[in-house]
Amino acid sequence: MDSKVMGHPYSVPAQQKIEDYYTAMRRFWHPVLPAADLPAHEPIGVELLEEPVVLARLNGEIVAMQDLCRHFQARLSLGEISKIPGAGECLMCPYHGWSYAASGQCVHIPQLTHERQIPADAQVPRYLAAERYGLIWVCLDEKPRFGIPQIPALDDTAFMTGPLRTYPVWQAAAPRAIMAALDDTHGPWVHGGLVGDRSHTAPPEHTVRREGDCMLVDVRMVQPENATIRENGRSNGHGPQLQAVKLCTTVGIPNMIHFMIQAEGSQKRTQIWQAVCPKKYNETLTFWGSARNYDFDQPVFDPVFETMQDTLREQDKRIVESQRPWLVPPFWTKVELPLRPADLPLIEYQRWLEELGITLAL
Ligand code: FES
Ligand SMILES: [Fe+2]
Image (cartoon, rainbow, N blue to C red; front, side, top):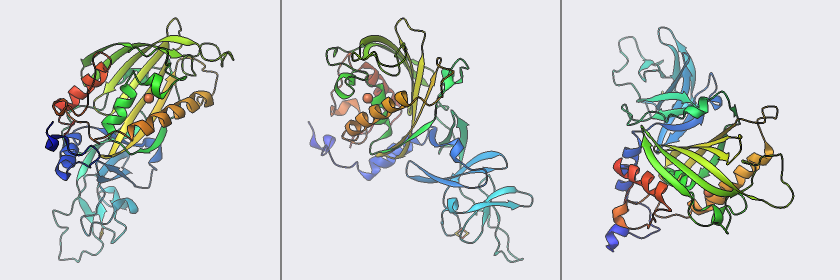
């Protein structure tokens, strides 16, 4: 194999490759913050694809702008919300008080003398922002390639929504985090006793298809009876029994994954989803949610269920953080060796990323 193609397996990508990755990823909506974490009268700074972004609620609308003042490039997120006659609520820089309207245009400069106008280019880039699934989503490109992923099940009123959680940053690329959730063969090795069993290592049956902006994967697999699928209360005390489970998976390309989980013969259905924020090429923040169509009389926070999810995430974290190269390499490099039919969902996800220019060789 050509060593220039492979590079050192642990080396960081060339700067140009990182920029190519960011350019490809900028065309998608990404989740950046739980909407509940953005106060009514205070801006907050977040990071997306190494771009500093300030979020604020201005005149009843969620606004995202580049988090750098046009004057001397101070962080607008350290500033405050001001009220400017004719422009309403604006974002005021903490350094010299320049105020920016929701459009990104500067509309007030306290130091402006009478003979001067506000310079026409006193403006900061404004980005697309929207609220969905309890999260604030931002697209850094004016023309998103896809919409915010559509997951109709999350609007189904037959389900009770669990808490929205934010997991600390993983030192990994966002597609690798999604692939870890999509991978349906690692359970026996990484999550033995929870969602896998080493006496059942054959690949699950799975089918994959594309529908709109999403990839749909149906999986039938065997899992130990666990907190997600357990039929009657808590454990029977005789250790986990194996159970046939159906997972209907929806992958919002490139950064969201949703599971509808149902044990065979059961009416209980549980939804689990993750949406990941690529802060940097090698730093990924995960937002995680759940919903269930049972136990409506119980609190939404089920400590047994939540503890199990925390354990699964910890088990995955150390594996995903160990993967190199950081960015998913295209098939032609042969750096990785996905196997059919076991890795079919991953192969199809990666194929789509490749079409969108998101996979990159070092
Ligand atoms: S740096 Fe923002 S007002 Fe001067
Ligand atoms: Fe896992």
